[in-house]
Image (cartoon, rainbow, N blue to C red; front, side):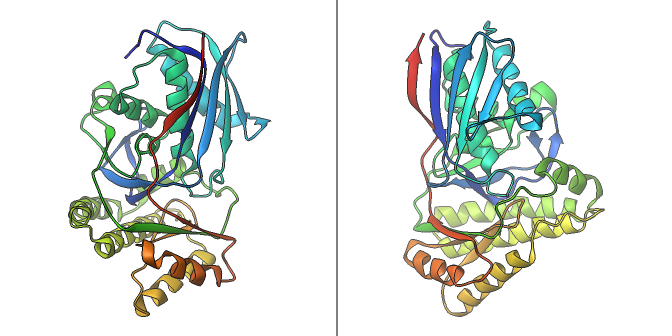
Length: 336
């Protein structure tokens, strides 16, 4: 996976993705191998910009939103960079500067854009192959959902088979050809970090929820149905399937012991408004990741009506209209 050239400084930009068929639970923690396939759409909002540059120090450094990072955030980046270096004959350490425009740890997929941007920038600095599938598999090792943010628009992440290094070769994302009149209206009700990380919540759900196996089986059926909806350009069917898949995931988490509760009272207020919009004849459907913030799927023509309704709720801090966005990409290089 090593290429012939590399640069001393590379800057990349990536966008978060929202899963329509959720990824929840790993069969292999070390290699971030999921139990089932998932499907997402990369957004055209909340970009992450990451610059990686070599330096003469003896360890990697992370500057996150202008401030030196420590703790688990730094350790995750350092572990990922060790994986990258292990694929080359390079030993230089780097400084990683990341600017996130999406709140971190609030269920708005900040790790998907963060590690996708880091993957592209680090690959450029260390001279790794720029094949998107290879980059997708590498990004997965930093954060599972990051493998989908390598691509723009819709993509599917294949769980693959096997464990360890064998499974690593078979789990990656690929883009999907799709043409839908689709918008997502994001209702932000909370921007602070969630009380339990996605990683810990996944572990607890898989280990203790009596509903997990049933949700996993239904999720596989949901994926087949959603692929058909994409083929037919049916936004309403896509939204209906995405909503049931997301609410099923949250029900599974609620059944964990102890329960994992990401949906708040504010979340339920937004969900109630989505149901009211449907009763009023507007095709609006909700999806929620590992956090309290709600994303509403609708046609572009209905997006402003949905946004106006959500802005009228006392619980919303911000409402943003977004849609399918671009692939991750390199925006600047400085040759060695």
